[in-house]
Length: 434
Image (tube, rainbow, N blue to C red; front, side, top):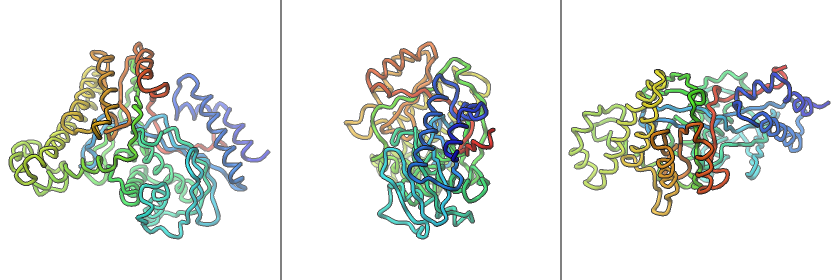
């Protein structure tokens, strides 16, 4: 029996099923679904590469942002969680420095790690992310080398659940597993991933997405210093009768980089009015007293949106503490009220609901959630905004009707019920589970 057949057989052992439950949750059908998915990935790797050496299974989760909308890039605070949607690779080591990746739904990728220089023509591509991660790891003293990977993702591109961060963290984890003995610090792994996205891919994201994917669990993260302060929060929404639901409105984030880039840029322009590099270094009362000066420096009218976005930063930063405190004390109503307030601030001050006059799907989803959940749950824009998804906390007794109503508007598979994944990037060693 070859290793592929052995691994597929091991997928159905109690120890492996327990591992799967840990990563993907206990909802009906999850084990069957993931077993079929892992089987497909192993068969796909055998079909494409038929490796003679060991094949490993590596997973990196998507993330949900619960609080701290657009604060991380100005050294703010966030409340985020890894989720049970992930990017998964069946991967084997090569003897050269060639990377070959076959991702379901995408063109095959092949590149050489002998050239890790930034290529302007690669910006916005998968190749840029792989090359950028390899460049950063090399600079940090890690070993990189070639690999063959079959890749599948349940974190849909452009959905607002951080497919790019999950992929970057996955690539870091692959190099770690194959060449570095799985010794990479999760925080550093997130920073290496962000480098690839910022510099090589060309998207000026903060660090929240990569950190949530790499670290795992529900966490309150403070980015004030270079080494983020991470506080895990143990809270079971399902045990309190709530489901965490994202609604995919059909819009994509893929072409919205200029909209995202404008938010941190404008916040930093406000900070620069006080001689600072980011808003975290400005006191809230200092900001409020300085609004006339900001308008004078940035221009009346032109600077007003930047002022509004800065106001969102200060309120949202405080609100993250309120959310975390409410969860620690099991004050669920207070937490839900803060989620709604966060969404209102994103709409009114941050202004990341609409990308254009024709992109109103997110606003429609928020209105419908307001009508359905008012006085019962909570709702807000999810992730970067402008398009993509909304985040909803739905009472279990309302879940069926909520999903039905939203699906009638946005499509049959528009709603995803999420579970918080307690583990970030993971190596699933089937042989070690037995």
